Image 1 (cartoon, rainbow, N blue to C red):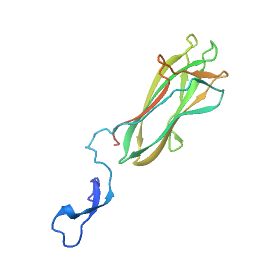
Image 2 (cartoon, rainbow, N blue to C red):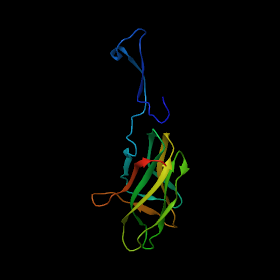
Image 3 (cartoon, rainbow, N blue to C red):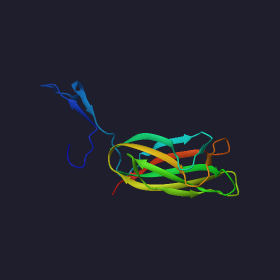
Image 4 (tube, rainbow, N blue to C red):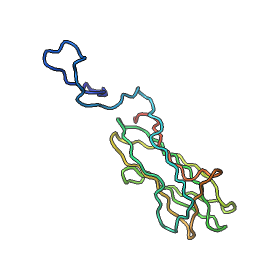
Length: 168
């Protein structure tokens, strides 16, 4: 393919063909993306378990894979609904990973007064083209357990990966 182009598909033409309707599909390419466009939501998972995160233990709350046709900027969007086991509040580490590598480690303080609270984080990073495994984990950062909540009133642990455009 010429430089700077995206292969849409490859076809085989029979010898002596005078029209393209006799071509057979040889391989599919990537979908074409209009320059500067977003691919939208790449992953959207909600962990709906009401459970405790034990001290220093890691709980994977979302996992999936994405295929990026070009280098992209993606936004990790994380919503957590949780509370401390006691009135001392506490905190939890939220860890998004791409291909096993930590993107960033966030520490989120829990409200010591309320039983549970929802909090939201967003973090954008550049990701190279290709197939990638994405995970989102939580680790209790306190001396007490942390409780995860999900119900009609509580959002649970929601993880979204959103494509926001081409990398520079």
